[in-house]
Amino acid sequence: MVDDLRKYLNHLLEKVNGLHCILITDRDGVPLVRAVTERAPPLALRPNFISTFGMATDQASKLGLGRNKTIISMYSSYQVVQMSKLPLVITFIGSDNCNTGHILSLESQIEPFLKDLEVVVADAP
Amino acid sequence: MQSDDEDTSLHSCFNSLKTAVMGCCYSICHKDNDPQENVINERTHLLEVTEQQQETLVPVVSASTPPRKPDEQTALNRILHETANNVIDVGALGPYTLEASAYSERVRVYTARVAAVSVAAPRPAPRLLADVTHAERVALLSCPPLPAADKELISGAVRRAAAAISELRVEHREDLVVPFRVP
Image (tube, rainbow over all chains, first blue to last red; front, side, top):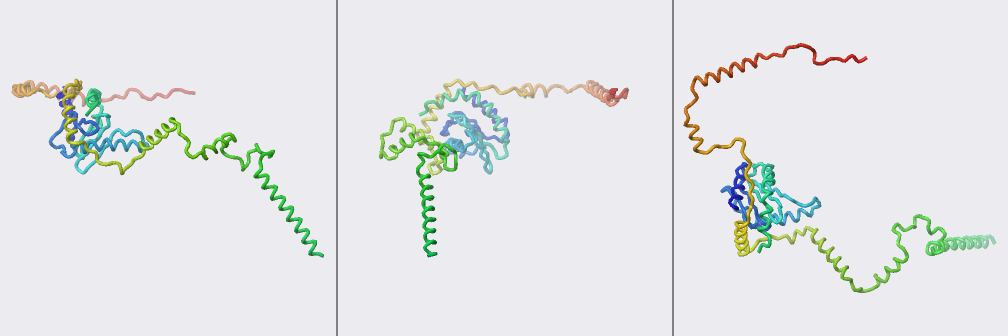
């Protein structure tokens, strides 16, 4: 079953030009499912990089603009799009010239099976 | 003689002034019998505090450490908690890292659980221009090419169709815009 999911994520990865990886992790950056190409930067796949989003989205929600849902970070060579689907976090890493709108549109295609994955992180050690 | 008169008049004037000032002060300080008490003027309190409330406030302030009710304590804790939640404490935001052992333990648990859970992965939407398999591709490419006669037939038909389309003309018959005879 999880292979089907990984295949599906790989299929989505191929659809967006310049997208290097899609990670579905818990709040602390521990991966559940991931589809990664060799062009993905290894440092950005580490849990201490991904887990900063949990903290950032909490603090950004206190700025008086409502709950924060997505944070897009643009770097010199990469872009990182992280979506809050608590208790899960979806992380997309792509090249700096990758179409950000195209990445954001993948949310609706990943969302349907997140409910099934939420039970995995329930009562995590 | 004249100076005595002046002194007397000054003294009486001072007395009358003193009486007026004292009366004024009395009227400010002593309001109980003021007939204009209910009239709204510049001295009216903006927030009306009843005398009963004023009286009850005094013992609360004067009491040193009154025993707090549990409700009050809970409410204070709630307010404290909410305030702490709404504050962005930049100093307290340190890098959070999971311990290596906890991380590997969690990875192991997640791997086992993900393998067990039945995730209904949505099927990719069918492509409009679907690719054919390798065998079909080879079979198609190895087919004999189109015969020259068929090619000529298709080319001729397309040429005649293009000529027919190019000869289409719009012929003027009557005006499209017809004026109505409005009186």
